[in-house]
Image (cartoon, rainbow over all chains, first blue to last red; front, top):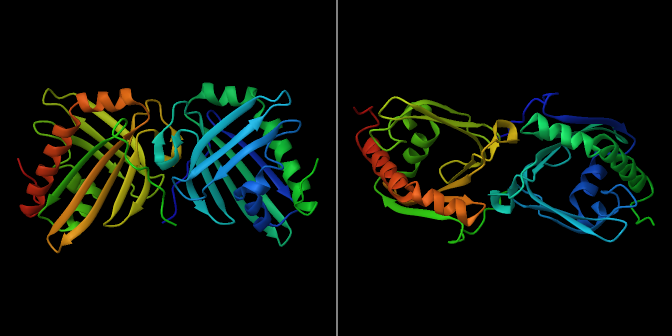
Length: 165
Length: 165
């Protein structure tokens, strides 16, 4: 039974779409494995200091971002929908086990489709509950941040998925 | 891939457990079909004036309660996990499509297991994000309300699932 996603609404939501020269299966792998995700998930010079992923609905999706000054910013949420190599949905509105979270902000849809054996259509959508939160997320640098991260991810995969400096 | 549920925490959560003399499959049916749900889901003399259910993750779970004075109280959320005859998880923290909701309050787990062909173990758990919301839900009459509703549901099923006055 496939989950029902919302049609993104430009008033509330933000969409980043890219065509990238890496296989769908490796995009899936680096998104769902903490040891890989750590190396590209934050725009440098920020980094990921901790990561815990239990990739199933209700499972923990937690990353801690580390600022260049050494300050940690934890993010915790859970997965909502998982279709291997195709769709990953997670949110910060619910903690693991679907427990309501203290600071609900957004739900993310990551949607992947193959454009060939080495090419992927990559669509990341941030779904918000209010126009205010969409504007806030945009001002926080959604397009730059999520865009930089895709570039870092592609570099990481094309570099053989070895840690970079 | 089975979803990860939280272990209920007495500080945050409320649990109602019953053993009832109706088959699991009919409990599932009356919980997941609007025409059936309407007849028992609100403690009388309140009633359900509208109901829309799309029983899959991200699908709408909406019921409007009608007070004896004729005032409507809409509730809208979505399903998170659906295992036929076994588990139904829904929340008001997310709207359909997993969009963050304006007034997040709780997630519900309905867990069913057969104790025989005509007998069911029925566990309804309300998961909250704060102790304050657990207390509030308890003060709103969780045990009485959800308990009354189970009795009404059993009567409805045992009565042949025909609308009552």
